[in-house]
Image (tube, rainbow, N blue to C red):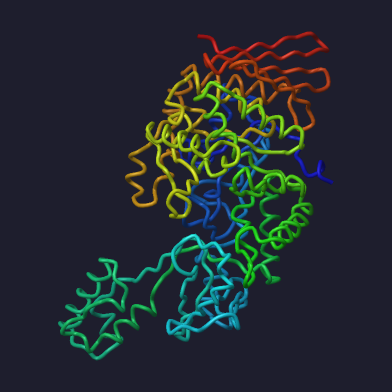
Length: 570
């Protein structure tokens, strides 16, 4: 059963947003049709802004219809004609406030057919805490001591119902409450007030809202007698943005899951990445992240749906090497991400020593752990994951090195000294060294797994500090998400560092020595690592010199005695 879940296609996979190259998916397809890109990619991981989304560059999904500004059904048909299959995200834990389900709750309250679709905080904790004056239950401390909340305070959003009652809903990730500006006529419709006074009162109110004050925090001065009426007007018209947690105990959520997976399959998906799945199972007194056995029961039920539509699941989770979550996932029959590889390659290149990389490659082979690997991605370079694999003082050295080269540290959900990732382009993390970039790519392509290629890595993108500044607070990830024009792509395709990456990718895509059922030998002598892949009369060898940053790739077809040869050159 395990092998049946693993896709036969271990070919390289492009990774990009639908607007990363040129501005639309149509532009990316035009790029993929270029002669230089023939037989380079077998798969394409399109990030979720391809869907109808509102926040977090696509990870707050309103629904899984295609974003009409970025993609159309014909694009997916074109990719199929190019023999490129697809990987999409499915966000199990939450949906957008703007989803039809949550909007129906806002409109119809207790009469909504979706009232159980999301987690009503007070219903969840009923009998397990104390009701506060603000209208939400404060759970007993012993019941939340093992819970992990990603932000200060309780993970709730107070939502106003049609009858004026405020109801708390579970909200693990982002939330924003917006209050609309008012004018004199709005005030005159709601209260007995003269026009001139209404003009002044609306100006006072709007100025306070612009300063970030909540309605209850506004100082109305000489108009204090209108306080309650103004607050009620503002609160009755408040709007929300955010990602609301789904109630996986509800049958209608499972209908939604089934419909979503069916939709992704219809788009041409072969792999579905499960984002934030480990937050979905919840119960009083238990962990709300990687709940055991709840997490595995959830995955098992989702797997049944995936099998129904012929899809491979790729659960996404960051955890340290020492926790062995990657091995647990593999033992349960799932593909997993190799979040260790990006840091291990930088570690090997900086120390001129690939002992840890070789050890990891051997472990993957020995334990038959099937992975998707990468260098860069839409997030940062994961470092939390290296704990237990690399000494912590050396992890700190890696952090310091990448930060000196222009990267940003992202602490784990605001907690100091718990490093989650460093945000930088992979090329900049390597000191913008072409030789190191090429050697890193060669090492990735010869490591076990399905290689995923971030578009900016392919085109040696540099840290985009201006994008970070434009994004404002929390915009650190934009350092590695720059959209590229087709004109810029034309320029970059003339660079040797880009041409040679493409050459290696074409070899990895087409040469038959590679695959999940191939055999690997890997060894290191001094600063030279040798990888040898074998399968059915084909042999692919990489000789990588970590001292000189040189590589040599040799492919042998034993049936025809044809030899393929690629080397880094000077």
